[in-house]
Amino acid sequence: MAAGGVVAVGDSVIHGGFTRVQFIPPQSWAQHLAEAGDWSFTRYARGGHSSDHVVDEQLPLVARDDYDVGAASIGANDLQIRWDPERFEANVDAILARLAVAADRVVVTTVPPTFRRLPGADRRINQSVPKANDIIVRMASEHDAHVIDLSDFTSRRWLRPDRAHPTALGSAEIGQRAAEALGLGRAPADARRLGAAYSLRHAAGTAWHSAWLSAARVRRK
Image (cartoon, rainbow, N blue to C red; front, side, top):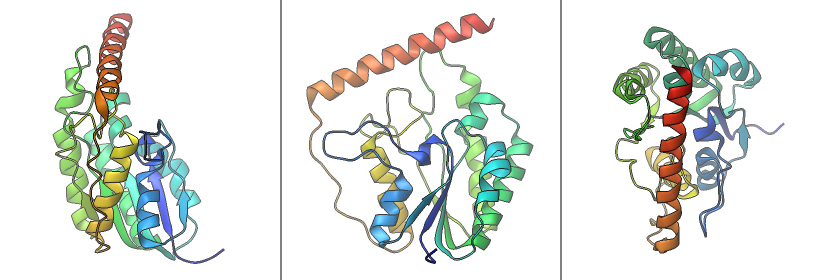
């Protein structure tokens, strides 16, 4: 197997594969990064995985120590499934420590501030986002990892109606930010208008997710 490349671990945010947005292919932001650096791409990330899953199931698959870049997106499922800040910190520490050995450079994303901020959503989830991001930033500093700050990731251009997953455009934007953080430069931002149809579909999707979250909370009571 050839040396080098980008290895990706984490959840659905980095796994990619969401719906194409007109002119942007649905792929992982780490794959956009790999293309920017002309690197190969290896993905162990899986949708629905928490930091526990990454430590227990994904890190053992990272058997090589000669990657160019280790990439991670973690935290979303910890916030939704079972938020335990001490456990999350220990897991982030383990994940970034392994990637720091496996790769020359490491990049990790924060959780968008509007994560799951929808009518009907459990407010405790969103209130825990700053704490999760504090942990990610602090652990990244300890392991000399580059933080891809998504604190301004609030636009419907970049986030799907569930306000948890990036659109195809959002994944491309994260990949560009990662490339810029690694000194690769960035391509010009795509400023093409998405049109009224996209806006209407996004609004309908937001309403559907809000209703679904409200119904789910009622069922849990």
